[in-house]
Image 1 (tube, rainbow, N blue to C red):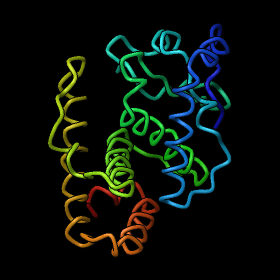
Image 2 (cartoon, helix red, strand yellow):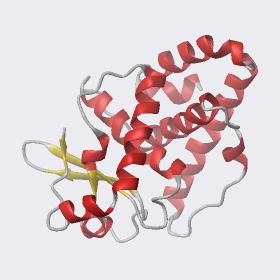
Image 3 (tube, rainbow, N blue to C red):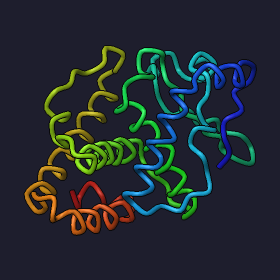
Image 4 (tube, helix red, strand yellow):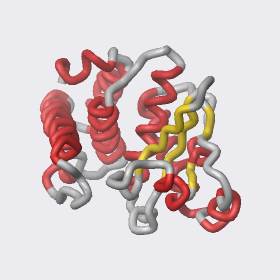
Length: 203
């Protein structure tokens, strides 16, 4: 998997976005630490200019997201962030999660649906919140849907959100105390490594 070669302003964009790149690096540190991932990539090198990225995507694409560019011999990947999202740590974690999970699956020649990508990112955001001492479940209960979503997209996000919320509530029941952290981490790591087509049923 290679970083997406979205042309033109990439270097100047990166130079102007040091805080965003630092946030992506921090998100990668959290996710790789929680799941003990050994990935040969630096997520911040996959951040691309949102304007350039959106020119390559369908008109109703999210303002921040994952960019996949199919080429004859490979698929190039990038993540992009709208200016309104660069200071939102949960959006940064979500998009970094998509990139890392896709890379982890690519190393194993496993395919994945967009639904499972969204589902895993919801679990990742819970895990980072919980293990950094914050309310892991709070963000499941305080949110609004974005206006850009069409009906199928909203249904996909709603399904991922609902299944992840149920799974994370079950984690809270089984591992409610700080002393339960080793068991929580063990379960999270096993779940991350489950086959994608088994995750939704397991949750």
